[in-house]
Amino acid sequence: MSLFTRANAYAPLSPAQRALLKFLEGLLFTGVVAALPLVIDAFTQSRVDWGIVARAALAAFLSAIFMALLKYLRALGDPPLPTPPTP
Image 1 (cartoon, rainbow, N blue to C red):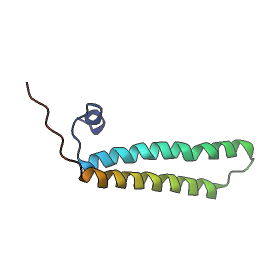
Image 2 (cartoon, rainbow, N blue to C red):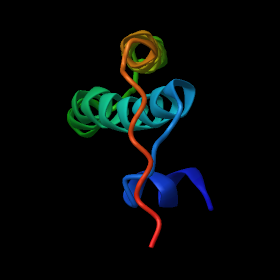
Image 3 (cartoon, rainbow, N blue to C red):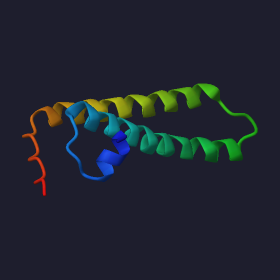
């Protein structure tokens, strides 16, 4: 069973697995938010400043890493989930 299938089924996940999911989610959302002003800038100017693009991408990536690290550290203190009853 894949990690995404287990998460969708609300199966117990380890702190590292929860942090990985948070990293992927954060990478997606911060990437979209960072890309919006760049796309608007690209349409309004004839030349794209790739330095700004690189800094925005780096900021999005670092934000996702920090959110995942915070999730991992918080998940370490969570009590273990009860196992579901077997029929």
